[in-house]
Image (cartoon, rainbow, N blue to C red; front, side, top):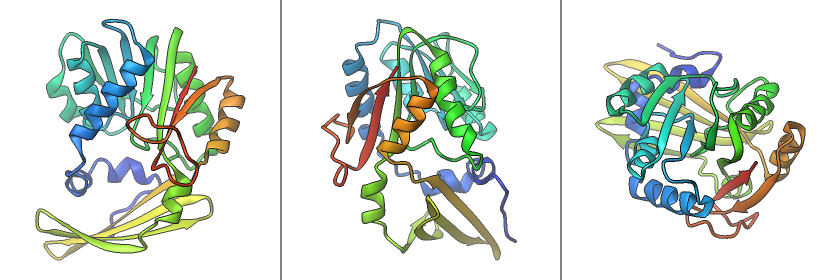
Length: 243
């Protein structure tokens, strides 16, 4: 059976197989990034943070342990239902479309781990930046942690097989029509599953254009989770601070 949907992220992220495939993500690296980022931003004690497209909440939970009042939102009901087990008085999770404003103000709005550029409708990308602007208080900062498209396209692995929990995930990658595309196929109990990840191949210049249209100002750009200087061809990440 071919499991697919027009909006790939609405179905793929809600499957258990997405979380199986990516279960080996480096939590220590993620926590180090949050330490570096919050120190750099010098956020107030008990400051309020909105974690946009929070997934199962790994960044949100750690930020809360650092003492911040955190709200994590995601379009995936399954991910939010999972994350809710970690809720407390200063950690909340909600299902929310990040291209629409969230009705609150924050000291920082984080969009992490290439959780941008999924939308087929180009206007939704701009609307997401506008929504972040509306969610920031007077002194707040927006942060988008995106892949460095230049680096990714230069180092793209055309295909491979990743075996996790007895499942062989066949992955094929390509750059096509302004997108980085990954086709994922696997078989379980003689049933065939096919999913596709599509992310806009935004460059720093593309983001600058979006920021200008949204009326926000780019303050700084980093190239990795240690907040090293961004290098257009060699940096693995494109981390942008704006307000």
